[in-house]
Amino acid sequence: MEEAEIVEHFYGVYLLYCLNPKYKGRIYIGYTVDPRRRIKQHNAGREHGGAYKTSKKGPWSMVLIIHGFPNSTSALRFEWAWQHPHTSRRLRHVSKKKSTQKTIEFYLMVLSEMLKVGPWCRLPLTIRWLDDDFAQTYSTSFSPPLHMPICYGKVIPRKVTKRSPRKEKTNESQMQEDYIPIQLCSICGLISERNESITCIKPSCRLIAHLICLAQHFSKDDQILPIEGTCPSCNTNVLWGDLIRKMIGCYQDLQSDVDNSPLIISSDEDIVD
Image (cartoon, rainbow, N blue to C red; front, side, top):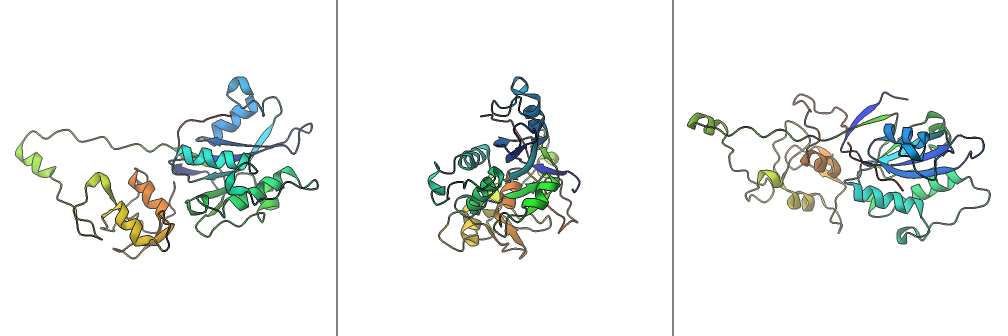
C-alpha cells in the first residue's frame, strides 16, 4: 500500500467486510467523512458510534471507499442506491444475487453498474482500495470510466478552511494596496464577480470565467454537468470536478512552480444508518 494521501473536501461511501469467523463474508455499506474514525467506531460497537448492523459482529475491515462526491447529499444517495440496488430506479437492470455468488462479489458488481449510469458516471469519483488482499482478489471486478482513478492506500481527510479576510484599510495607500481590478470573463468578456468566478487548477494560468460559460465551453453533449475539458487559456486538460473543488477552497497550498504534481482532494461529520 502507498502512504496515506491527504484529501480535501472528503465525502466517502465505503464497503466493510466482516472478519469474524461466525459472520465472515458479511458486508456493510456506509457513508463517512473520516474513514479512520469510522472503522474504529464500527469495531468498538454501537455504544461508541458504530452502526447497529455491525455492532458486536467485528472485527470489520474497510476494504474499499469511493470518494470525490461534491457534497454529503450526493454521497448519501450513492450509499442508499448501493445498499438497495433493486429499489433504486437507476439500477432496475441489475440482476439479483445468484445463490453461488459471494455477497461481496454481488455488491462489487452492483458498484460496477452504478459507475456506468448517470448521474454517478459523470462525477469526479475516486475508487480507493484500502486493503491489499482484497485489491488483488477483486481489482478486476469493475472498470470505472476513464476519468475515475483507481487508487490504493489509506486516506486522511482534511477540511477546507477559508482564508481569513484582511482587516479594513485605514488610509489611502492601504486602500490602493487592497484595490481589486474589474475581472472580465475570458469566454464571454463580461464582468465576472470574484465570488462567482472559476479559475484553472494550473497555478500560472490566468483563466477567469463565469461558471456557466466554462461549463458550456466544456460541454460536448446535452449534459449540463461536464466531465472534463481543455482550458481555453492554457490549453491544459482538466477535470470539471477539480475546477469546482478549487472554486470552493481546495488546493490553496498549491505552489505556482508546480504544474503537474498529483492533486489531492476532504471532510465533515458522519451520518449513520
